[in-house]
Length: 198
Image (cartoon, rainbow, N blue to C red):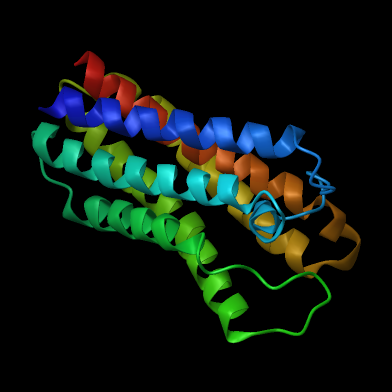
């Protein structure tokens, strides 16, 4: 059962990654170094953004279920943050960001809160599970990679904050966000593959 659930999680990562790759080669007019990933959600290609968000939401929730079944020692806090991550992604595609330069709205504020929940919960979950993996006989092999990716998420999250508030650095906001996406997807995929292989 754990293997089947982990396969669904891995498929979610692959679908998310495929949608994001497509968005980056589609003629959206967005600059991946400057513009937020969420900005794809207010273009004519918003369906692919929603699909990417849904796929990562499913991947996160199914990973939480698989870990509940597979771990020899429970990590309730880690599971909670994975569930927060999953629900943040499942809903964000229907709560669009405000267009750059447009007046701020309550919908845009809710979008920002969901995006923050995504980044923060992914980072915290990765840190929490790293210790659990190290103590688990079947998953100890991925503990070092989990730790590296957790720190990468923390660094990229800090860069997102920095590039969102420091004027000269704002042109690099999109790059910082995309690096965080890569780290999150890599972490979920690494754990899912380990569960499939164990």
